Image (spheres, rainbow, N blue to C red):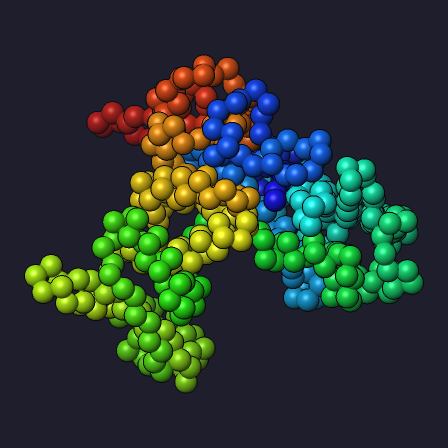
Length: 428
């Protein structure tokens, strides 16, 4: 369960910006459908979904990229990043002070009935600080804190009394490189206490950044059982795709399987990677309206929308069925707005604790009585070109206000300023 995520000095975000999935106490609508209880005393209910709006280049994608970067560092810094290798972090570049400061990431989430607050600050060369606070029974316990001492050029560590490991903690500390996270290294060296946090990032948190196409592999694997295939078909046909069955065969990869228009260099790389291996051959079965015969359609004859939804179906049902958290950038770029509406309704009606955060330009969901006001967020840039993140619930919005019309009229900000060019006029 995700409570909030904060980012500071990363790409277009200069000052600290926080996305919160905690419900606002001022709104009482759709509580049962759109919210759920954390079962932790003192914490508010959490939202099942959040939609983020803003004009192009406002910072929506940067927010998703920030969480993706944090996840990558947790999962990969101990194994894939070598000593001395630069970290792929970009600070706010439009003022000198920010260029020289560290970027900071912090996340608050619940795993195993315990609230955790974990974060780190870093630049391209090293980790400058890292901290983890646990709240068993609502009481804070600082498990560890790491700080870089600029005078000694070394990291200093403080371990709390509740942080287990004994003498092994010194081994974990000594094994942590300057550009690796202590959390990641300790888990690699078998810290059982920190393992659930690592697995939360690995298995419970899923991020689909901008321009990342989902592979159909997961959906195909799900279709290997009759129960899994039925779930996929029900989901796909709820979007009116009229698919009677799905047949997935394995065949040996050949050159003919590559798209004709693919660049030669890309073809060469795929040939080396897939040569001699089996690939999945997907056939979508459609019913002949006259004979009721099932007619196989190869994937290449299906629309991009059908293929995108097929690739999305498996991960999406996995998120709902296993109470995971999914961040998707520009969800409407590959899925029809009505499909997105149905997916959000499915999530809200699941009765579980899955969560969805998505960026979008599609405003139609605002007029469908699907989202509460605290589920609608905006990103826009200020006069210094720094991104600001804020919820609709912070604004003075009437209870039954037409939200789609209000947004398009600029009432809430976060819309593009379109400058009309007259015939014969010159830009610039």
